[in-house]
Every structure is written in C-alpha cells, then in structure tokens.
Amino acid sequence: MKKLKLISALMLSSFSSLLWANDITGLWRNIDDKTGSSKAILEIRQESNGAYIAKIVKVTPRPGYTPKETCVDCPPPYTNKPILGLDILTGLKANGENTYVGGKILDPLSGKIYSTKVKLSPNGKRITLRGYVGVSALGRSQTWIRHE
Image (cartoon, rainbow, N blue to C red; front, side, top):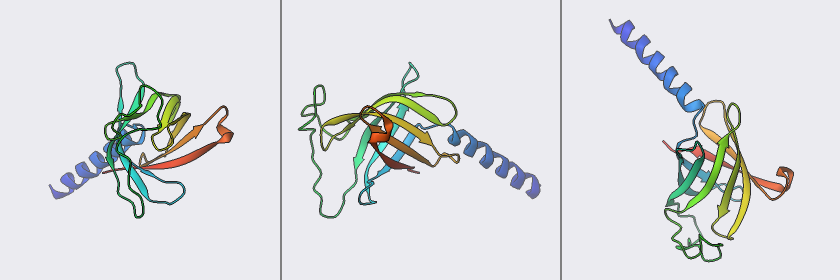
C-alpha cells in the first residue's frame, strides 16, 4: 500500500510539473538585469481572447532605491496611475511551444513601452522576456522566476 501511495504521489508530481511547463499564468518575480535583485512580483493571467497580461502585485524593496508610487512619466492611459496593480504587460499571445509574441510591456520607471516576446524554460520555472523597439536584436532581456 505504501508503494502505491508513493507511485501515485510521484505520478501526480510529474503531471503537475508538466502542466506548469507549458503555462505562464501565475506569480513571477522579475529580476533586474543590471543588479540581479528582484524588482517586483507580477501576476500573469490569460484573458478570454487568449492574450496574456501581467500586473504588478508587489514592489520588492531594494537597497538604495525608493520605489515610485505612481507612473509619473508614463503615456496615457497609464499617466499618474498607481504602480501597484498596474497592467504592464499586454497582448502577449502563444506562438508555438513555450514561446509567446506580440506583447507590449511598459517600463513604469521610464514610461517607455516596448514590444515583447517571451520564452518559457522547459521546466516552466523561468521566463526570458525580451523588450525591444523595432527589431529584437536592439533590445534587452530580463529573467522572471516563478514565485511559489
């Protein structure tokens, strides 16, 4: 009986990791590509049209940095909106296995909006988000780690 429970638990664990491996919904910690520290916790969710959006659910304190409370330099409709709860990633669509394209991401610190594509790691625990203007080669990548 113990062996059966162990086998069942292992199978369930394997199955749940397969579910995570192809799904970007959930909570993520974004990691600053310059400092290596976490900047915020974001929630990615899927809209009824299949597109993915992400909002800031927590701003992570960092040494020597006082976070802004509102999106001061942001274009409309983001101007002067609270950063906490702000949808910063919109329009991202699945494009094959573990890749997502066509999104736009707002940098609430600079107020700039970038085109975005995302690659989910095979184990589903990290995404590499590429923000760019024009062509992807002229952009910057950031790693987000699944927040469990």
